[in-house]
Length: 403
Image (cartoon, rainbow, N blue to C red):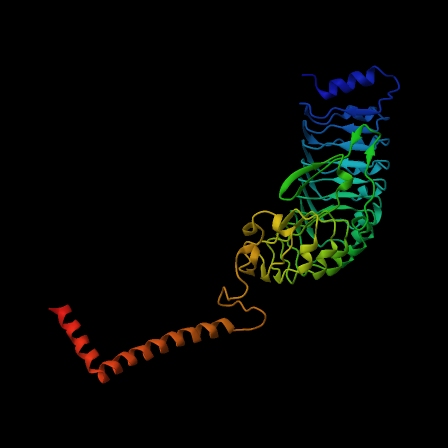
């Protein structure tokens, strides 16, 4: 098979002044390193090479392609650091480096990409802190996917300065600290807006896990508004102000160390379709407003310390097996789980603040049974003593039994 380098060499030789606008060679079987011949195609605006077998480091000369609007190198095996030279691509709007083996820190030079709309680096080996300049210097970012790397430290408050961010995925990293209250200022998650397609040649795309499965959004991407902080080490409570992100379709904060209660304002997430709070340390009752979420089609509250009665609502009854949704919350009760809330199910469960009420009822039941037996026995003995005919008959029966 002819290599990509050979193809690009023929293209550049055949044109004394190369005017090629698009290099769209994805889903082939090209191997080897990303060719340095690319730097000669100075006019290209789209470099689309996903789903190949490229390996090795990314050449520095890619920074010479200053007309680039889109670079997609998804699903290859490219290693090394992300080159500083990419900071020269001041017109680039979409940068996909997903599913490679890039390592090290994000280069500071990327803060110069002020036109960037999509930054997707899911599933690499990147480390260090999440840079604050993402929030301060990249004002057009709508889709930010940092999932499955080794980023550490706290979520930078500067992210809250972005008023168009509508997809934030920090899942499966090593992030600590709390969920910032300033997320309330993420206007892009409060109001919906349009989506990005480059010149009808490149269709923007995002892959993500929603409703427990991996999905790829393309034409429907503009419907996606999502916050995913799952599989980190985030502590503290869920900020009540985060319930004002009314445009959210997906909210996943599972597999963290979150405590406190589910905010009572959860019913404000009127557009939410997928909600995953599982595997935390949340406690208290499930807010009744959860039952008012008419678009909710996936819910997971399993393995927390939730208690009390599960809210009843038509939508909640259509979400699948309740034993999966509420598993690991032994103090929950209600019709959904076929577990009565009127009697004490566990030794430490108290309902409506009437501690020990069921124990007292059971005690009087046993006392009543005992007294009934005693009274009946005394009545029989008394009758045998005072009524001669009964006494004679009784002893005749006893004699017949034993003879």
